[in-house]
Image (tube, rainbow, N blue to C red; front, side, top):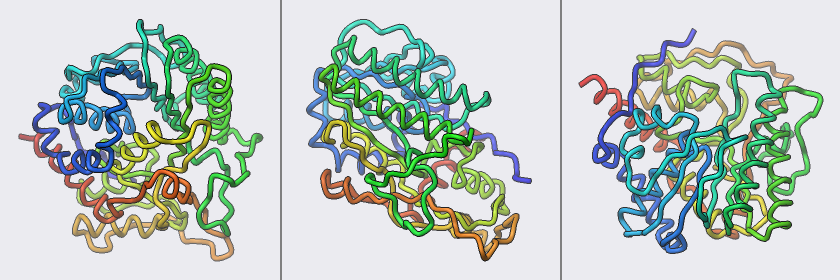
Length: 364
């Protein structure tokens, strides 16, 4: 059984949070500074703005506003404005941000015009049935696109998922955007991937009908500050285990392959795709260097100074091919100049340092 997640809180003043993320935010600015002028005097609308992706989008957006003197604002959709203000008060009170309460499937339309929309509601699971998850993705995307038409948006970024490809063949080391696989529609676990496929189609249809540009990002796996430690993300679970002294628990056999992009690089990729991506064209978002889950656990253990303090629940079956979920990102590299700036060991080190600092402040 995994150890309980330590009580780690993010409630702090903005100056402290900015200090702990300063190197990451400067990294983001160094690779996006020439893009932000497009937002001067503009308004954004962001769904999913209070989750892992959204927190990084808001951190980088407000940093750009402050450092570049952008006269830009964002309205952020959230189901619980008060809870977000408590969790991240420096963002909840930032002058460039206002928060709009509502469900992504039915929110009332904010007044006024918005030039850019980021639909980043990326929850991959809900406590309800898979049908609810599917409805949330599809209906939420449809409603957001209706708002894009209503508010006169010029560019819309859809955060889709690498799950749209279905099961990656074990012989395909890195899955490209041209791969024509798909989730199994008879498997209820395909609700997320099928929902994202429909969301992409709805977005392309809306763009063609209404004239705005739609940019499609297909994210894979990530690590970084704000990553949840208590859901189904292996990297987050391993860091949680390390924070309480280990051991690092691998609940499967450790053979599946993943690749991890650091959150600051994720922000660079998402902003670049929004501003410069080709409309109605999908871009994989992630790292190409694969690591099996057992190796990931070892990297995390070493980062905590735990040596090989890793417990793997099951022995691998030699006859079973390892599962893979690893993107080919040549399109994003070639067309948009995107790359991995922070490698996996450093990404894990920064994530651990951030959580340790947050825990220290919470205990002070």
